[in-house]
Length: 365
Ligand code: NAD
Ligand code: GLY
Picture 1 (cartoon, helix red, strand yellow):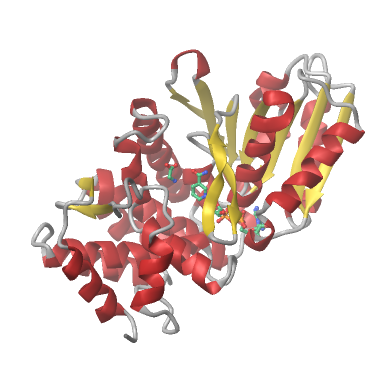
Picture 2: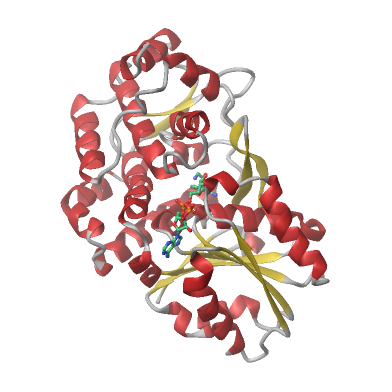
């Protein structure tokens, strides 16, 4: 088992990464002595792993007296306030107090919702992230962004709220469908593009192994992604600057998710197409070499991810949906763009006519 730390002063927490971690209670030490635990999961993940987590809890030196489950419906389309309420129902019906803890067991949808519930319940209770998708293991479980979607905008209702620990059992990826592995690879490619050109090259050389779920390659990619994310979050927890680089391709991607209806394209798929669009604009602005755009496109396509937005979307739809973005400030759209592989900038200082003409080039209009 490897251990990284997200350095946030008194809110610092460990990320444990390993195989078969659910076989031992060692990584659940932050729950030691906790009397009430709610395991939040969904109808796909709970039957696979909730029993293992329950057994781990039972092995703690002083195990919880009460373990309850909130098993939510599966999917991005359920990431909303109505579903969130099901978690509060469980907490209240079972008389959970302020010392209770939540375990978020699932992908990014469950992690974001359970984390937001933890942030709100009685003004904040502790929680632990147990991510079970590649995307959540390399990105969403780390850094404390929690929340739900609104029909007008993705992740628009939420809170920064850090977990007590992140427990990444990479053996859970064995049951994950290939399309979800690819979606996770999109966020891994993001780290190479925004922060680490050497890692990007490693991905070019090892993509096939990742797709084939080679355990050693996945473990390396997960660890390197978490290291980068932990470093960025430690520097800028609440996204007053640097952290926004983690959103390369996301403003385009969120527009796709919102426009198609949440869940139609996976988050990672929308981000993949969005990253190509952001690289393309960077090239047109003269900030990025065309070779990097071509390498990014090749890598994304080889990962079985889209390199273009859905054919049904118009430039106008992008402009409207992108105006509802958390990076919009003073009415100005800000984008994450590249000034070289491994070097991202967050800026509104780009030619907006060019931005629109590149949108037109990628869409029907
Ligand atoms: P997801 O949570 O919907 O999981 C994908 C699918 O895999 C679901 O059907 C799920 O039930 C299933 N699943 C999960 N684990 C499994 C396993 N081990 N075996 C078999 N099936 C399994 O999607 P995701 O890609 O994990 O997360 C996407 C969400 O994360 C989006 O809502 C996105 O906005 C959010 N996100 C948040 C952050 C953040 O910083 N908080 C960062 C990136 C993405
Ligand atoms: N996924 C973007 C962030 O955590 O900031």
